[in-house]
Image (cartoon, rainbow, N blue to C red; front, side, top):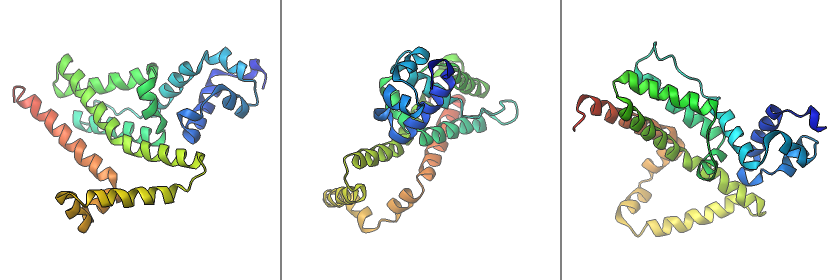
Length: 228
């Protein structure tokens, strides 16, 4: 594809597809150019470098999150909707967890999300400083809960690249981890009666919902008793 027929939008969209399939380590200008049937050097004309490309791709997926109407529901419904949207976005694009640690993140879609969640907490009654802290707390809670899913995707991808049987490797690791955990009474009790662990593994979203409810309960209580 000649350089003058490429667009920044096409490059970013293709980069997101590549990132979803290969992860952050699989993104480079050569592989991206191959997908677009274009020279790698043509990518730089539109996106400057890999760091800027990751920033643009990251901002693009922040735009996938639907923003709730702040006038219709209460602040809590809005906060829950924004948290759920962020969690779903990260699990669709788990590479963003790794990008979060090593790349700059800014752009109109990220700012749009940040402004909306601040507005939700302002509607709840927080002042500027309180809304900043509440938004940061919610962000870290969602990111932390999504790390497990991102780690599973990354681990399976890495094992596959090495030509190893991912299932066999994971089974061996689980066997070793179970043997070690059995030395400790509380973990042993759960291994002997694994209902709780099975329930979590079957529906990790339930734990996310539980934690989100507890977090928003705590923020609500801070409003009614700010010194508590």
